[in-house]
Length: 155
Image (cartoon, rainbow, N blue to C red; front, top):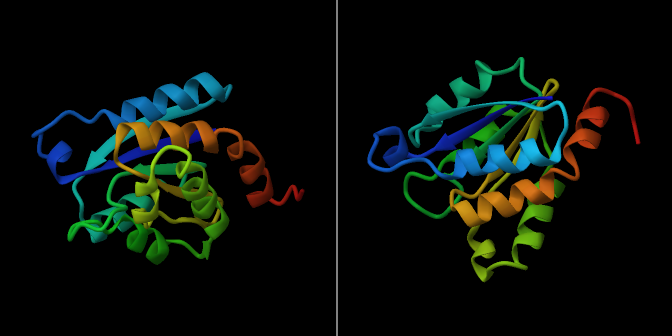
């Protein structure tokens, strides 16, 4: 499984602070999924750049974004995901939000989305380290089966 963990943050991309969510997601997924290849990238909060980055990574199986899912004026990750994807997978985002309520009522403020373009699955995680780690733990149970289904293996 080839995964890109894409941190979406003006401040991390500008070197104002160190990305902690991306490495934390990588650590969780590496521990939980065998044979996974993970690369990380950091980009600013820019809708057009997000869509372009998604397109440049079609050879991957999964892109997990972290950041840009809240209510802020520069939070465009769900919109870029919806723009790029051919099919939305609302159940993934709903499941992550529902499970995240176990940790915080702030899960209600997440606008995260998930979708498919070709064989590429894109899933939005929150930008907080705690939220990103929790979502990585939860999604690790579903990723392999989701990819099998995307490739036509059925249930």
